[in-house]
Image 1 (spheres, chains in turn cyan, orange):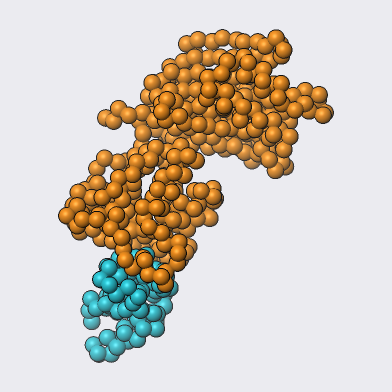
Image 2 (tube, one colour):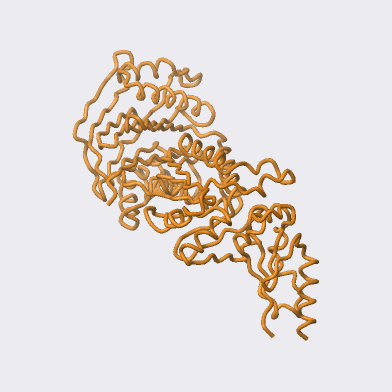
Length: 86
Length: 394
């Protein structure tokens, strides 16, 4: 299975509005999924520049932007993708 | 080769073991308009608070007299007359070294009672061109030594308190302490290994070595002050996206040349530079565990350090203003501070486009405008850390 890519925004707005705990996602992903997910951080996803000011923090999962991201929302999304692929 | 010169001055001190205040004091001043830098190191009689007060009074007066080119003998007499008399020893006493140097190299060292200065050109101890002894009628036992010399680019002048030259006293192999000769030999060894060592690192190495001669215990206050005339090291900090998008390319190219080191502060700024220079940023998520309450620092291939923008620069500014112990500063801000310390000219290239998201009232008030933070940072770097600061807007 092709790896799921998770990119976390490290920009100012995202960091202040809740991206700090998301940067620890690598250790929060359940053991059985670890091989399937590639977690990385990017300097800025640039989403806050496009007038969606209050929807930070943003992450990008398999190229799709997730708004108001939380650990739970990210884990749900990963689970969904894994299920779909199975 | 850059012809510009810079006078770097730094001092390292250790307090006598068991005392809360250092009995030595130093003050430095850079007078940009006169291309001149002056420094004074003083050792007060005894140790602790009493010595600290004597030393501090001496450096304060001596620096002002030097700054205003006052008559030397009169200045020394005023200092001696002003110092409070010690209850125990019935004398007022402090020793001092003053250094007055200009970018052209003309330098004067004035000493009273302190160990003789060292003038190093490479590894060579250079004798003074002129030496004069001045004695006061009122204080006949206190002679002042005035030395004149010319510093060439790369030269260093080192002055220290007797806590350095007497380090090691009490040990068989240091019957008379480390002495000037031991200190000189150590400096030559360090400079042989690190020919471009900064004033800060050299002062620190000498002070640490002096401390280690008594196995980490300071038997006296230890101070070492180094003046280094050299070609400046330039640190360029790029922060913020340019106001006009068509300037992105020129802005990004600043990261490639003209500075000894480059830091990129800001996610959007990093994205612009990645795009324009076809490079990429590597963020090591392992650093998240140790990066404190700021986003982790990262690295742009072939360019240098990358950090988040406003929050990190604000933290750098506050930490420098409040003289926070750098070990207690979050990783990204610490990395910037350490690079600032290693350079002489700090150039800020500031993109002035405002990120509207940062004006969201839900975000903390300290999320200031980039321009304000950079201005504040520039001020503290010039006034407190004697850096040369340049700010360009894009």
